Image (tube, rainbow, N blue to C red; front, side):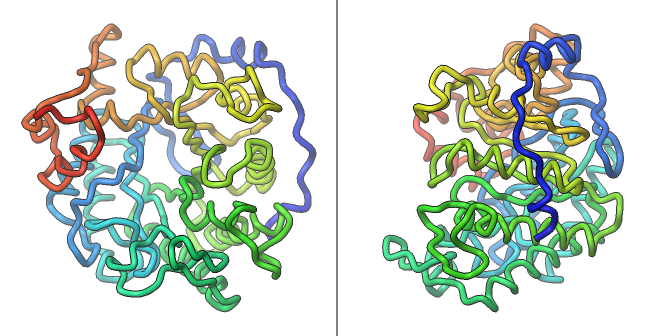
Length: 381
């Protein structure tokens, strides 16, 4: 199971020391990793659901436009939407696939175009598990354990091993396509997160029970990527500490295991709101951000996402100890958010709601615009 068993206990680090050490850091400093090239600034494009790839998961012109506009707009790291590693892992219509050789040409086209901008390119590797709609995948979804609420069936032991192999195979495919890195989507209640959750994962084999067992799938995938991909491929993991059965202390422990493995370059924390306080009573009065910036992380970089709206918000999370600010809404509203910020530190982003035509001008296709209309108050009528 990788090196989970070799982990030292979590230590509390002074938040003041963390802030003091990087308080002068700029959003336009480069960020170096243990593997591969440096990131030219601290802005990362969030892996956003957009529903604009082709039905078979191959790259569409609309998806290509969306991603390359952000890379050209100055995002130091441009990440694709969640890209499913198995056909039955599809989570939404129009999802970019990475599970077959039919996806390779499109993936290579994205990687080549982003590389030409001088910025980093990642694919987020994903499987929706029990969140795969039956009507979309044509069969019952799968889950670590049987789930009556979603109609998901339990994965057999052999299928768990195949799932690990397919995550790794997708990483190899993206590696060969020329991406600088891949991110394992372990957040938001998707399949890696489902394995981590004691609420969902009721398995009695080595993939269920203790936290170490529930994290085994993730750590095995990490090991496989490092063993089968080129040495300088960057590897990130996305985690979320609340909702979907996630407990802050368990996710902090997984965070520490990933650091101790010495195999992960970046941990991408989706915090829902980077300035919110933890809702668990034992962490009352503490910001979620502080609970993760205070974990010793050596050479592993920390990205944080969640309602970072203004350049001042982005700078604040860096001042509070994160290495990278991950933008979703800001990147939708301004394809060149980093470039605008660099040109004018007092740049004021658009506020919601915005007209559909504004979104089209920022490189969103009709399916993407229609998807954004689902979010209350985002698109004006």
